[in-house]
Structure formats: C-alpha cells, structure tokens
Amino acid sequence: MALLPRFLVDPQIGRHLLRDEGEVIVDEVRKHWVVYVVPALIAAAGVLLLGVFLFASVQVAWLPLVAALALFAWAGWVALAANMDRFVITNMRVFRIKGVLARSQATMPLGRILDITVVKPMTGRVLGYGHFTFESAAQDQGLRDIRFVGDPDGRDLAIQRVVQRAGLRGAPRFSA
Image 1 (cartoon, rainbow, N blue to C red):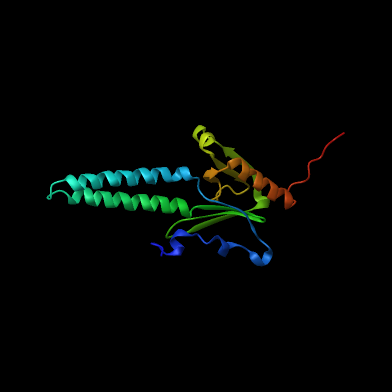
Image 2: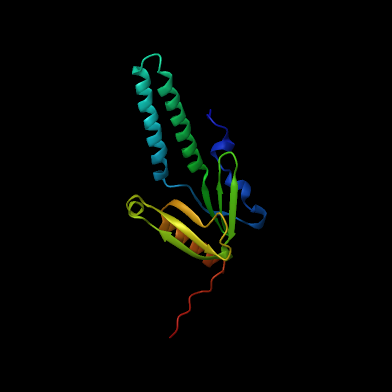
C-alpha cells in the first residue's frame, strides 16, 4: 500500500500522448539522482533534531520535535517535486510536466527546436548529469531550461535522431 495516492507521485505521462496520431515516447527523463542529495541532507538534519528531542528537557522537548517534523515535511516535498518534474521526448515533440498539487505542462514541437545547448558543470561531468537549454522561435516557454538531466549527451543524441527521422532537418550534403 502506498503512502500517497498515485496522482501525487506519478505524473501519468501516458495521458498526455497523442496516441491516435501515432505519438510514442522515445525517452522519459527523470531528474538525476543528485537532486535528492539536498532533501536527504534536510532529512538528516531532522534526524539530528530528533536526537536533540530525546535528550532535551520535558519543557522544551516539543521545539526540536516540531522542527524535526517540519524538516521531514520539507525534505519530502522537495523530493516529491523533483520526482514529479519529467521531461519527455516523443517522435513528435518534447514536453515537460512538473508540479505536485498544481501541474504545469510545456510543449514544443520538434520543428520549433532551433538549437540545444548542453552544459555540463564539473560536478555534472563527474556524476553524469548536465543542463539543457532549448532555443526556439518563442522564448517564453517552460522548456527553455531543463536542469539535472542524466546522460545529457545520450539525451541530446536521442533528440537529434528524432528530429532527423522526422525529416525536420535536411540530410547532410557532401560536396565533391
């Protein structure tokens, strides 16, 4: 039995596909595991406060207990928000769904992708994550920056393959 209802832990990507048009998922990108380090540290601080609670005097023991519970709730919320942030590559478009209680979705057809910049900070190169920046004709959309993408080179190649297969870019021309 799950602690939370399914709609709170699963963004239900399949509901957003145009199946009758033949849309299929090429890749569903979850956040890299490194985004869960901060919630884990917050929860560890909550554990420390529980230790303080055990040894505190009765008159003030409630304070570290309440603070620990607040830290656990905050850590859970941050982890859940990271889990619900999904970037999806299909054979027709890329889209992003995020949000726990209120959800937002941003979609970009493959033909509108002008350029993809992949940035891999030093820690990202070591741990295997990077950040995407999408350039398109319309700059005000929720797909501009996708952060903490695992295997960014592979994901970039997957997008490039889908764009190429869709015939949105011409075949390379070689001159003799």
